Length: 296
Image (cartoon, helix red, strand yellow):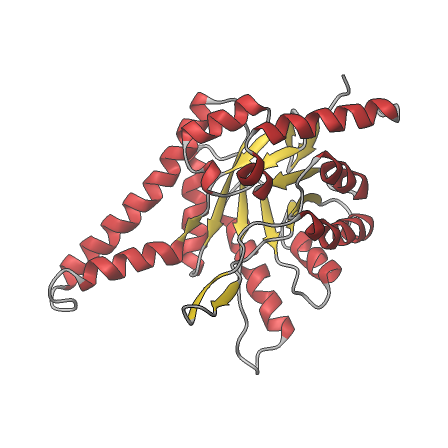
């Protein structure tokens, strides 16, 4: 058997397969199943500040007289927030206690305080690293690309300053200069990049004349775009780890991304579509490839 061990964000992994942040990494039972299947690490389901704020708004709306009792509103806001955060911190703690997997906590905030406080609490719960799930959709025609990029670097810098564990950024592909953006993120403290984030995409149902979501799963053809940029970024930006994501549905996809320069791959759609058995298949393909080419 080939040696599949690798290092990502300074963390030693038994192999380069990471289960990406999704509903499949939202419970201890599901994560134990991933561990039994052979995955090297997990990124826990993101904590979404916007979702928490929505829950607070719904509770305040149904409380009777919003605005009339500021003390009650303060209590509700803190109760919902603390309850939501504790679900995520408890998950981190339990996964660390009940499995041997490295745990990467995923954070999606909307306020500067949200990004830093969530990251800090997840670190204190035992997370080995933080992954920033940043998605900013620019719709202001006056906003420059430099201003958009600064939003990302400001978030990163604030989280890095408030935590001690390594921080990675899950990056979208819609930047004018991806290599330049990668260099800026490295300069502001990122230890790793995930290429690329797969965002919610809208669609229109013509039978119902309603807005909805397009297909949420990736397809193998989407590997090509990430493959190009993993190769380019790894060859031009030094001393930053890369996790390839999107379009990895089989062992060949794993191998290609590693050859292009990724330290690890993150898989999600393949797990939903093929089950956890795909992990063993990918590991087997990687082993056979390495043995065929006499790679240690």
